[in-house]
Image 1 (cartoon, rainbow, N blue to C red):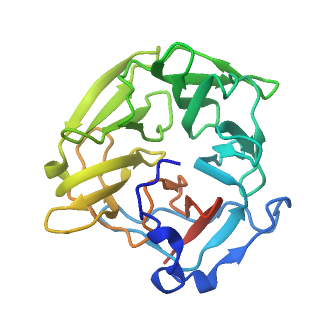
Image 2: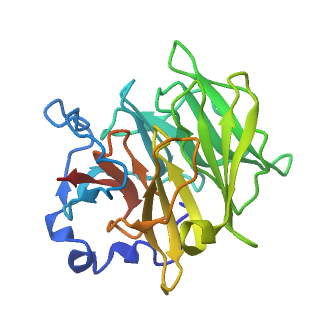
Length: 291
């Protein structure tokens, strides 16, 4: 699960740290028509850091990571383990529901897919894949077909290593995508699709540009106006979850500010900023935006 040691604060002792006394367990086998993705939520104005509840909702009781949701198609995707295997499988289901292996992906014993990034439209997946048979690492793309299966497309033209991380893509047709290099020295590259399979580098960002001394992962919101990072600010002594926004997807982000949410490196924020999902304790939780 690409979690840095201690980043959940092990979620032990979290009852005091993040109010786990308020955690609610939602039956992941039930479709919750009375508790959908928060349809009335809206992102705060640019320049305002969103606030999230200290109450947590446990919605998927499976050992999964890289959880993301398309509110357009009502699809959730993640990489999940089960008790009988040591390798992750790309899995899917309804938001907040149980996840089953998705169709169209290679044997997980041959190709390890450690993270998946779903487009906001729910029609494409970007996958960090390591082929054990060829000893090659690549960022793959998959297209969702009419029968619900997935078909592999062209690989993304970015160098994939054990220390590079894909952020979730924005809406198309002109998608933005972050590629974070976590090691020697860390940086973030923002790429923009040209609509025909090509990608152009828009920004190369050093941690200092964001007021950071170190950086591990970064994610864009569906509109490309907001960024969440697991990073360390200049002057601080520990990593935390940070937030920045911008008025247009064509301009750089400013200095990052604390978001005040669980200490995890994998967070997914819905397009309306209504929910933040994250993996912990072999489950998926979310916390809700508050006014």
